[in-house]
Image (tube, rainbow, N blue to C red):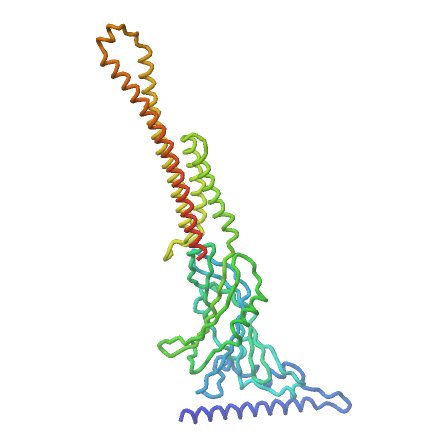
Length: 429
């Protein structure tokens, strides 16, 4: 019964449209009658097509009703996507701003005409709200700047085409583990949640490879991010009131790391090389400690700059954070090694000073007679033993200090090589 009623309503609507169009041509033929000798008037304006389609006279209800010829068959909307620019990527906010163009194409069989009746006018351009258009919703959208260029091109066979520019800020899960050598993939999901799949279906117009070539040919920006790949996923989103078609465009982009290498990584490596040069240099240990603390302060300033770029939380700490933390700890270890050597040096100096004091006391004592030497042999022998013992302890402390310094310096050097090798492997994997 419902199908019969729907068919009857459609037939009634067609009869009314046919009567209005017959009346239109009758009126035009009447207006075209001119006095004898005058040139005939032909229907050759866009206004005549609009009046024929009955847009200017009837209400706007047709702009909100889905123009299906049969209520059981879904209307098909063909979607095309072209990325124009990557405007900004905010790591802290986990958002990305794209500028892209979305083209939609569908058929409205109730808006057709014969071009032969209108001097071969086969296409007109109208405002977007003149007829029904598919409502588009972007799932990841956070903010959007709307464009005023909202028009549709209508051809005589009922084909509608519209091209809509979008400047949209989207949420995107940015994985910054390999920052600044990272590649990100952000999604643009397009759906129409007003009509289930039984009323409206969406399909892509071109393959991902064709869209990638087309987007790269029109890509405008040449900034921090490089557009590398575009893939498509079509699926059905299940909700309480039915299934809805969703088309997801997955945009892959690669960061250009040159600026971060020059501003962060190379200065940090240069500071660390300077720290190693100070550690192996011929300066005194007190001067080394002073230089090393200054280098640590300079490295901490670079760490503050990095902290302002990265998000406050992530599943894993980025490799560049481990790089900064590792170099900072190695610099701290170098200062502790220098303090340790300085402590042993001062200890050796104290022993040497005590030995010299004993020597001076021995030289200032008055010479003993033979009888005194015979009376006190034990005391003289003990003094010589103490002198010899202090001398050998001083020599032993100097030797231990030299060996200890070499062990600490070379172990610090090889530990640094191992650390930088591990960081390089993590970044390249």
